[in-house]
Length: 289
Image (cartoon, rainbow, N blue to C red; front, side):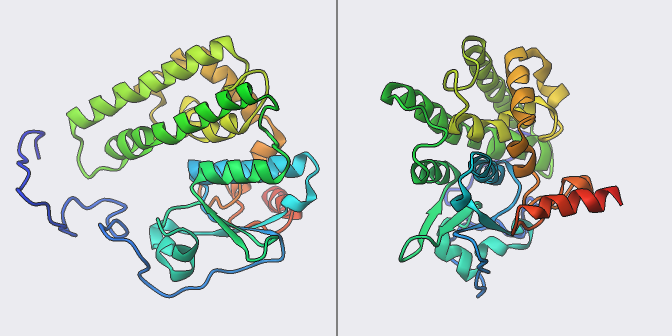
């Protein structure tokens, strides 16, 4: 199909068989559950329902960072939500996130339990819950942190839903779409590179929730593990982004967080469900066996 063959109809209608791709069986123009399925609940205060996509990794990294700081009340159970199989449309998950997107979090330390959805909201909630952890103390510096957090939340649809979809997942290549979104992604990388040329971390001298939110997307893109597009986007050009991405990736909590709810890649990098800190040791032991 050529880029110029399609003429939009006067009124769009959903054709489930049109333009099939790996997400065709779960994409639909309506909300709400497709089946009844209650969510599992473990022993810890926080119950996370997620998958190790960039948005999911944000939250598992945050929880592991809180534990690394010594916040024992940040212990959590992480349950796998397989979006390829439509788990996000189960009645229990929809009750936590009516938008049917991962990640979703339940805080059972409150009465009644508190639901939090949208990854940026979860990062802010966890920070506030633990005394402003990974946010600057001064209001003006917190404002900088919030601005970059919201920048990521607003930019990710261009990177994931735009470039990632048309470059990696669309059933056929559309030059206009790929060119349009590649241009925007490179502009975003340039925004980050300029910022990281004047600041050690995204929001300043401190590692914050802004870094935790941005690293799983743009750090992964810079290191060639997102959409296999490193060469296409010439990510080596962004020296400051690469410096930052390397530094963040070496943090112990980041290494653990990116494993949680992961069901692809090397076996040593996968922890489909996490219910105790010792689960990481089990993975390492099995990988060395």
